[in-house]
Length: 335
Image (cartoon, rainbow, N blue to C red; front, side, top):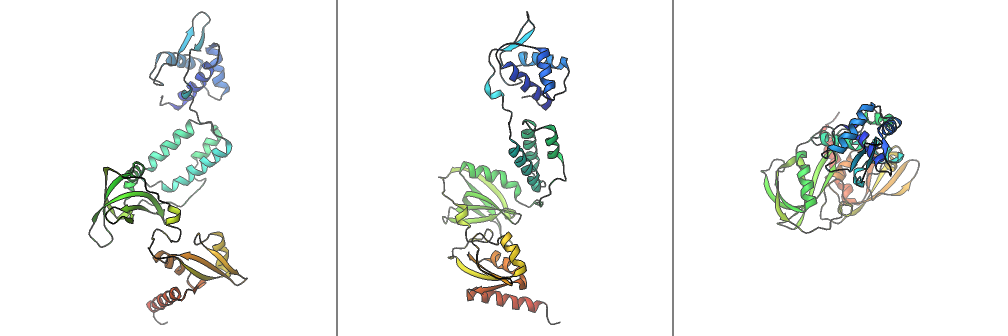
């Protein structure tokens, strides 16, 4: 395929015309290009026609293009349908693509971002998006998402994705903070993002149990030639009662938390957990019930509301919060 996008656009128009029945003059084809918004010289179109006839490397095959020298018109004996791979996008699809391109900018500091940007550029350039709307894709201050800073381990993402897709067993050298790295042989299942960090969820072959690796603590990844049978893993069910990526083997419990009226508006707009249910709501407070497996992430979430939240039940969870708040208050000493 030609590298020059302008030439590619001209070629598509020329081939669409020549795919019809009959023969067409160079002048007719030139006017069709001009009417399509492509500013091009008549001589350029003549050369394009000659190139498409003589140079079979442009599309990797002969397109059956010939010229009737008697009437000076061009025709084709058969252009393959797959040549017309232009993306015909609807208005809503273009808007969705624009939003996607702008939000993916949050990963601009990731090594892979350059390849993503180039791939999206090819999609945009080969589509029916108008020149005016293409300008929106180039604007830098149109939409500003949170930026994901590069973290250690993101260089393993592509290899992990390939291993997950090919169902290949991998060997992971992993070191928890303060511990010597160890080798783990696992079946990779899914990559999950949480709070700007990436995690690999896998099955530890030695123990036949789920294991979670934070990518920033992975030292090396080796993809083996050993394949494994498909594992039926439902991510939504697995993380249903968790906060973040920590999933304990304990049974989930119901926790009721009281929030003041000011926080209530935010919590209803942005739920703290998928299982949350409103037990009671008044002008002064909101009672919320969540079904969770208590973890560090769960406690941290409730801690973040400070005096705006109070755990009502169960008593054992309430005791944990009471004890930790007392310890925290001692850190500040007396005033």
